[in-house]
Every structure is written in C-alpha cells, then in structure tokens.
Length: 354
Image 1 (cartoon, rainbow, N blue to C red):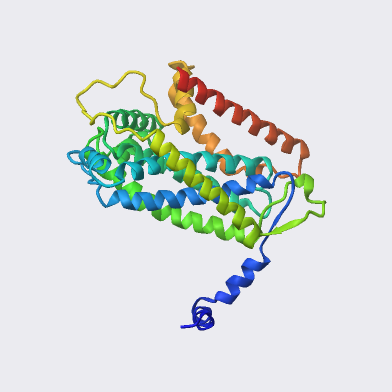
Image 2: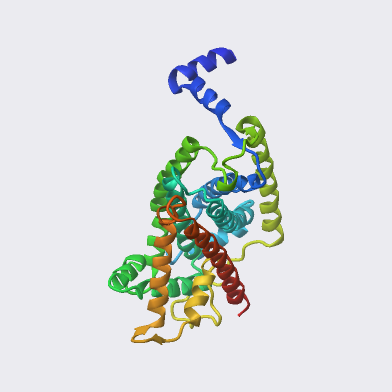
C-alpha cells in the first residue's frame, strides 16, 4: 500500500486531512513568558511515563497484604530491569506533581484563567487533585512500614473532618483500621477509578486548550506579538525537553534507586518522625504547628477546614478575580499568589528539616 493510498484510507475514516489542517493553523505566541508554556507538555509526558511504567509493574504486582511487599521485592530483585522501572515510576510521579504545580502557578500569575478559559483552569485544578490522589493511593501499594503508618496518619486527618469525617475514614480504609482491605481499595483507586476520571478530565482540559489556544498575559494583549508554528517548531522544542526528562529520570533511578524499606507490621510501633510525601508536607507541618484547641474547636479541625475552603477558593479563582470589575482586586490576587508560593515553600522546607 503506497503512502498516498494509506493517507486517503485514514482520511476517509478519521478525517486525517482535517487534523493536519488544524495542526498547521495552531501557533504559539512568543514573548518573555513563553518558557512557561513548556511545563504543560512536560507534565503530560511524565503522565505518559507513569501510565507505561505502571502497566509494566502491574504485570507482577499482587494487591494483598500477604503478597504486596513480596511482589514488589520480586520486581526489584528478580525481574529484569524491574528495579529501574519501579524507580522511574516513583521518580516520574514526583516530577510530574512538581511540573504540574509549576504549570498551575505560572497559569495563575499569567492570568490564564480569565474569560473564556475558566473551565480550562478548573479542569487543571481537578487534575492536580487527581494527581495528589494518585500519589496518596500509590504510596501504600508497596505495603512497607513507612507507607502503612503514613496512610494511617493521612486517613486519620481525613476522619477529623466535621460531619463527613467518620464516613470518609471508613470509606478510605474499608473498615476502622488500615488493613489488607485498605490496600485492595487503594489499588482499585490507583489503577481503575483515578485513571478513568483522569482520562475524562485530561481529555476535556486538552480539548479546551486546543479550542482557546495559548493565553497571553494581560499586559501584552495590546501588543502585536510574533507567533511560532506549533508543528514542527514548538513541538520539536517540547520533544527535546522530553528527551532530557528521560535522561534525568534514568540518572535519578540509577543513582538514587527507590528503596522498598521494611514490610508493614500493623502491631509494630509507628516509626519516629514519620512524614508524608513532599507535596503534602506543607499541610502536615501546618497542622503540627496549630495549638490543640482554638477557642472551643480542635486546632486540627480548623486547619483541615481552612485547607478545604482554600481549595474551593483556588478552584473558583476565575470567577473571583474579574478585572473588568476591580483592578485593585486583581493586584490582591497576584499578591495572594506570591504569599501562597512562599508559604508552601517555607512550610515544606521546615517540615523536611524538622
């Protein structure tokens, strides 16, 4: 079959010519903030790495309290390049959340959530929430000592929420305590429910990005900015970034292979100084610093409620920061974003060092 025949065959079935024309028309504005556009593509690439390595791990992993730890041990010691695949899966998960946060905060400071991109912003915030849920559910799967007690602490915090806390605690654990039922439940979240939700929200996010194109910062909207063709110019730059990311992942996996630790023992005492993953550390440290009681309410409950309200406000930013109504409010939102970044960075460092 010749190339032209194959092209005609595909065009008749999937509208290939329409997709080619769409790619030809797509372009990217060039200005001093263009570099931030690359973090969206990098996050997507790391997500693909997560999917591919996760499928490979799934071939050998056994989701039960009796076999989970041993199956991961088998992957790391007996499966060819199993240690490398697991380390790349763990490192790429951390890098993906880091690039996702950079992408989200750059969109915030460039005001990329403004009309008509409100839904693009909201779908991005939902994707961050799903990425954190992936991290939380995946952390328990090796069924090691650290993951067991970190999950116990994390689900205890969720259980402190007013009204829905007790229900949420039992829903997450599959009972009153962290057991094999919790592991099976987290495995289901990690490989079925969260991927299904992420596929839907990610497809919506990418569709909206294609529909509205790359946003331009408000200070540059009146300028006649030069533009770069997405294919092949911007895409090739993205590709170079992805190749570099593969090199970084391989180097991290080889030099700092992800450790398995000791098998979880529900009857053993919790290890001293237990901490969650770095992306939850600022919240964990905040709750640690709050006093036992504030007025007549437990300090931890107030802290959890503050994070829930903060998350809702973050989701609704496009509807709260409307420049046509009040430019002073816009400056306050920028200032609040800077304070938030400093707060997250400071509390993460303090939590790591303490």
